[in-house]
Amino acid sequence: MGRMTAEARRAEPPLTERQEARRRRILRAAAQLACRGGFEAVQMREVAEAAGVALGTLYRYFPSKIHLLVALMEDQLQDLRRALRRHPPTGDDAAGRVAETLMRAFRALQRDPHLADAMVRALTFADRGASAEVEAVSRLTTKIVLDAMGLAEPTQEQLSVVRVIEHTWHSALITWLSGRESIAQVGRDIETVCGLIGPRPAGTG
Amino acid sequence: MGRMTAEARRAEPPLTERQEARRRRILRAAAQLACRGGFEAVQMREVAEAAGVALGTLYRYFPSKIHLLVALMEDQLQDLRRALRRHPPTGDDAAGRVAETLMRAFRALQRDPHLADAMVRALTFADRGASAEVEAVSRLTTKIVLDAMGLAEPTQEQLSVVRVIEHTWHSALITWLSGRESIAQVGRDIETVCGLIGPRPAGTG
DNA sequence: CGCTAATCTGGAACAAGTTTCAGACTGGTG
DNA sequence: CACCAGTCTGAAACTTGTTCCAGATTAGCG
Image (cartoon, each protein chain N blue to C red):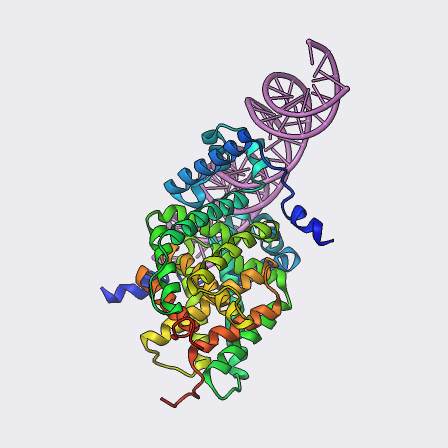
């Protein structure tokens, strides 16, 4: 039983080099179009053309626009995680480090609001058909937050706190992107939700 | 200056009786279709037909599918608020009352997950073009939460807490709807985020 | 090399949101 | 009543995500 699970989860046979290159070209093309005009500017025909693949091929690699943009977000998050490993947050308490981490991610997104729009809207609009891919992004985000907290084996309560932080993170981004919340307010929301972590330095209690 | 603001905000001339009836029929038709199959089942042509109006008329009343579904959510929230006025939450402390209120709303949504799907996905997918309408929903939600807290004049910090609660609320619904979070987890998230309110009974401190 | 299965291409076709428009209808006004 | 402006209808057209397919290309294999 358990033996098949890992295989079932990744049904993809390992891509050849050309295929890996195609996948990268597609993601890069999507990112470039997203930078121009956000979610709506990422048009599947244009992505295919810019990546130099046929439309049918694009859909073989990413079964929907949502899948494509969620994969793009996963890509960017992996970059972020690498950057965070090189330069971890420096605060004394867990709450401060998580807030610093999220604010750093937020600043990265601010550099390209259109790109952020495409990725975040795709993430929250995704339906059950893309839930596996969204789940992958969520796991990555959880890891990033737990890294910042310095927790290897979180309790149930801590996991719920992390989920609430992620909820706030996603939804605050959405309200920022749609112009209903300012950058400063998003910052305040992040600080506020990190208050759930508790002010005590890691290792105490 | 200030005198025109109220008028500008509601540019709609007061609808005639027939027009009000049309609007209602449209909303009801949208709700019925949403109950069948969620966001994707609400097809503008079908809404128009079920409501007995031409497609162009539908678009005159609601300039996009998103606007339509967000308006539907506002409608439902007004119902909820009326129900809450009749039977307010009974807890001793503010956090408990807010949690109770949100859990009640959540149970209402569970009665029709498809309808919830249509409304909540529309709400979080809305772009700047519908931000005024989304903002109206947000104001209503804020009022409902502040009612439960028993706060008439919240401070900056309290408003940020309310925003975080709303963020968690929306995002937790999304993860529940896409099957990535269980009902129990959503409940725990709501309890957790309400912890930000502080355990003290209203009136103390 | 030659074979076979899988993949990729180009392009048509389909689905659903949105726009447009000419003509019919309605409500208020002189 | 006659008229005007605004509204509604019915239908076609346009856009963009998605599907489908026949033929060309590629990859792995004997």
